[in-house]
Amino acid sequence: MTRKILLPLVSALLIGAAGAAFAQPVPTNISAALSDKARPPADVSRDAARKPGELLAFAEVKPGQRVYDLIPGGGYFTRLFSLTVGPTGKVFAVWPDEYDKVSKPDSDVMRKMAATAPFTNVVVMTQPANAFSAPEPLDLVFTSQNYHDYPDPFMGK
Image (cartoon, rainbow, N blue to C red):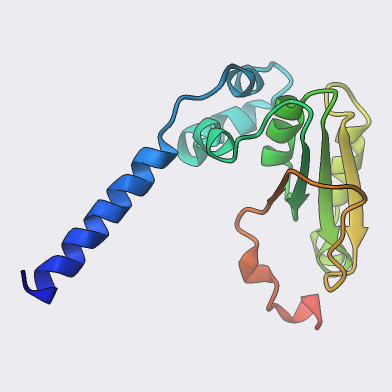
C-alpha cells in the first residue's frame, strides 16, 4: 500500500475505534442524573448536542467520587456531576480568580445553586490561575471549552 492510502486508512480505523470506545452503555446512575427533574430545561435542551450520558460514562463518573470542574461556566456539567456523584460525592466548581473577575456573576450564581438541594454537594471555589489545587484527592478533573481562555491577557501569567 502506498503512504497516501495507508495514512487515511489508519486514521479512519483509529477514529472508528475511538468512536466505539466512546459509544458505551450509559450506567443507571448517569441515566438517573440525566432524567432528574432538578435539571433546568435549558440544560436538557443541550443534551442532544453535548452527549452528556456518553461523556460521563466514558469518564466513569460514579457515586461518591470527587470531581473538579474547572471553569464551569453556567454549571451545565456541574449539575450533572453533582447528581451523578450523589450525596456521598463532591463537586468542586472552580474559577481562576482572573477568570472570575470577567465572568461575573457566574460564580455567584453557582454559589446560590450550591445552597439548594440537590446540589449541596457542590463546593464553589476561586483561586489564582497559576496555583491549581484541590482541597482533597480527586477522581476526575474536567473542563469544557476553556483551554482557549488561558492565554487570554486577562488571565495574566
